[in-house]
Image (cartoon, rainbow, N blue to C red; front, side, top):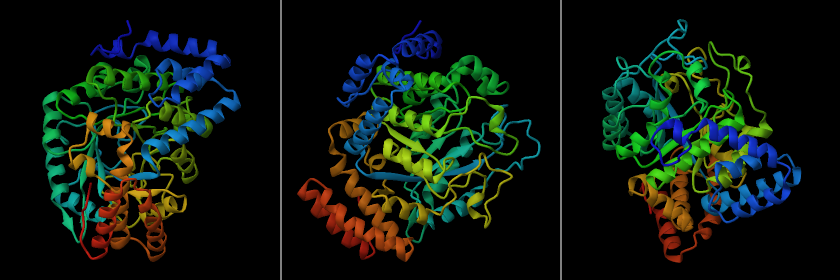
Length: 471
């Protein structure tokens, strides 16, 4: 029985409802009158239901797809402007007790080098990240109650926040660890984390159980209900995601939007972010073994439809994707990207990128400076801002700011000021030149005159050595 307000996984992600949705979408994909009505509703900027969005995903009318892409681009501009938030993943440990068949960290993989960072090693990794300019990290660890207990995660967060090197500082730590208890989520909240991220991997229960044959992650309901426990524990920014390629993409897309609807229905605020990783090659894992991979074209369509279906939600894309794919989906709705990522434990302090212990192959291997320059050349503002977390603008407070269109008076100047810091402290001369020109132009796009003047003043202060201004 489908019920978005239920706290039971199989009721808010109802298998029968998804099948019925897909059938409805197939029946109506050529019903252009209905497609037009759904697009018209999306133009109101209040989002779409999983059923409406599924009709658009099934529709293969080229004119309508163009219209959807144009709308996604416009909605992205309206709510997020031309900012792209930058972050990096930090892998703490690849010890894991689960048997996930698509991840090289799985318990039975005996030829991956197992490693867990000490606090001293974490410090070195963080300094390496600070020294290229990162201010926001997403920490990752396998699930292992002996090697990676919650105490280890909490100690690591404390270590990360304590490290100040030259002008470097990690101002926000987001956490991507296994589903846990309300009590542990409270501890993470008290440790000052930003967003709690947990990928569902797949919403198809039967597939989920087959893909996670052993270990605590096998429990579909416990995993799927994690976000409710996180919110009960006081974390109001949560990040959803599926691993596209494990199950049929239309099923996953409907499930993902149903999960967003459920969070909105129960907690009054949807997901802070949605991630869209695709299955990639890694040690011991061959993506060709999974026959649900999706083309770049379908991937772009999914990104555009997520943007118009949940217009206020941030969208994340990692270095799993190539520069070309990232360029297309940034335009269609992605608002956060990683740069210069290393997906192995201890990878940032190593001269050469290690391949034998990566969680997945990194397609975009450019330096952070190169990624920042590329974004600016495309007309985007790379943002290292973490102000909303630190000012308490999370959950519904961030959403109301976004819905009221106030982001341009808040996030836009914050993006410019954090970009200025990057240019002063870390950028190559070429990147700095492009960035200074961009900031000089973009400062006039801050709508409120008072905010604009304070921003200009702060930019001069940053030039003179001061740091960390925020609205």
